[in-house]
Image (tube, rainbow, N blue to C red; front, side, top):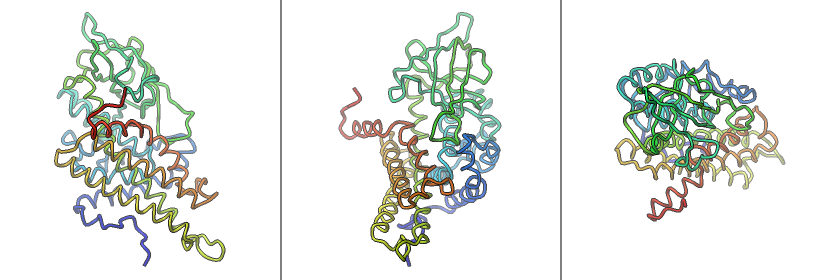
Length: 388
């Protein structure tokens, strides 16, 4: 009997009952609530905000954090959850990844107890939304060159000036974590919505991640109090450790997008008849399907071991870079080949492939471009930096 699932190596046997339950719960949610509406949201350039409370009910906001109303999922369970979210859409996974890994995590890891109590419970419930302000119009791959500056005020507090761009959730955020240089050293600052001097502009003219809110943050003499600074970290360790959290989720999430494309292509090839037989009966089409399931299987095994390393406390950032780099390229390649299998139908909104393909073009370059992750791994294995 021909293989029809995406578990060619029986990886389910390596999962705990809890991990399977998380995956099944999120998959049911995605099939029932996201798949039926996400194509329309993508076309309209909107995000399904009505689903945010349901993300919270499933424990998907701050999923792998402990305390403050967070679910405390293990690393593999969290990875499987992001896989299923991105099976629905990269923009949906991005929302949860930013809320969890880029906003809640730094508050949880580096914030004061007062900051944690103020923000984390509401974020876990989906009542408060956050965004992560690191990338600037002129500094993406080189965040150390950031122009945004903070200065201490004589009467207390800080004044921030600068611009952040490509900020997921920016225009719906109740709080922005803004990374800025204070006396030449990078610090994180909590800037609430409505703070005088903070202007947020939604970016609409994009053909990828359309079902995701992307914004620009403009800070002009934006004044915040002393207790707005994250006290537990200084330097680039702060934002980079957050990016490692988010990149971990992306490495799993990309598998979900690849699965969606592969399963769609497989079903289509078995039912679409050309020259008197199903497309799946032709050698070239079988070769494409075999390559797809091969690459998905390798990515699954890579992500599983990555999760084990994370749970054991042995995970290194370069290992996350290798997984993000490999798995996103794998997913983008599979989306393109799947589109080819469907021919003209591959560009129709009736099928998810074209949407995944366009989304993955962004995932390929955000949270560290493919080339940057290549250099991170290259430096790790050679001991030599090729960034300059």
